[in-house]
Image (cartoon, rainbow over the protein chains, first blue to last red):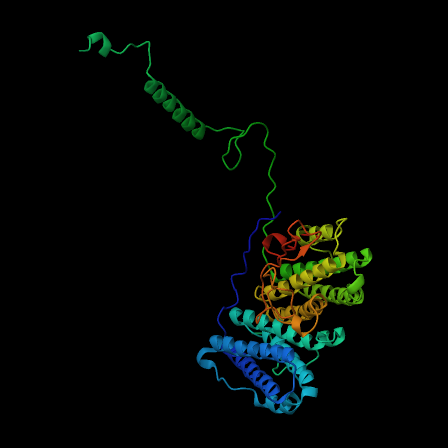
Length: 172
Length: 276
């Protein structure tokens, strides 16, 4: 067995977000607020069973928690404004019960794609860890729409979506 | 009144206190002499020993670099491949879980792609690709579980097999999430979490096999045991806690043996000197 030495290079990444990180994290928060509001619209306008409502409320609460967690990292840089473009793109679909669940799956996949680009661009480790933990649960949300109530593995694994942000060249 | 003879010490006799004093002085003297002397039978760390001391070979100095983390990630993805091959070859997916065979083949193929993807990153960084399973994870997590599943009088072989693949997929997904915060290069973090989000979708599908429908999405404690069921979305944020699946024949209290599974730490990393 080797000597257990976790020695890392002396140039370790920063813990706190950089200026460039804050812009990306602001975009992430705007997207989370938009998706939270779209869940609220779906719950208000749709006709769902009790168990469906319970799951949609759970996911809505998760997005609220993500926006709040990002608020903690952003501090004064937080705008707390939702992404209006995303809301406009999906509002009609989520209010219709027959298209709502598919629209919400698309939204979760957009968040996963967006946050993947953000994780691949952030310099600060605290925000990176937070975004990774958010992204992993949003991938679960998207897979739920493909696996419950009727299991469809292909839909559950489908992660094709366009990111809302562009990667930063060179990362960080 | 004491006689003078009683107060005079008899040089030929020692009291118990005298003996202890003399013994202590002797012990201290011996220790000082041993510490000051040179002895061929003294190891480098100063501990005296009997016999010939074999020459020591220094252990390699290792660092947890991005290459080491990626090689470790590839090794644990290979664990998943081997596990799927084992349970498929054994024909464990039967009865209510017969449909798991096709799902398992699909997921195994995903892991084959993940290993190739991660090893391509390793090679691009100048490292050596690692295409074997992680021995530590195999010996401490997967083999004990498989041994329990294969126990002769296990009444829940198929259920346990699905529990195993669910647990190992959870382990793989958690590993990727955990490694994101350890990788230095942000681009590598993006690549690894992209693979992790695919693995965590496997977890959801397998959780749905164990606890189907929308009622199996969020955590609800079992009314009898108080233990939370396996669910698709156990928490708001992706967790890194130890996974505690249970396998094998139940004991007299109806409980199965728990096999704790945790993501690789320093003693399970595939350092650059490690080869298959």
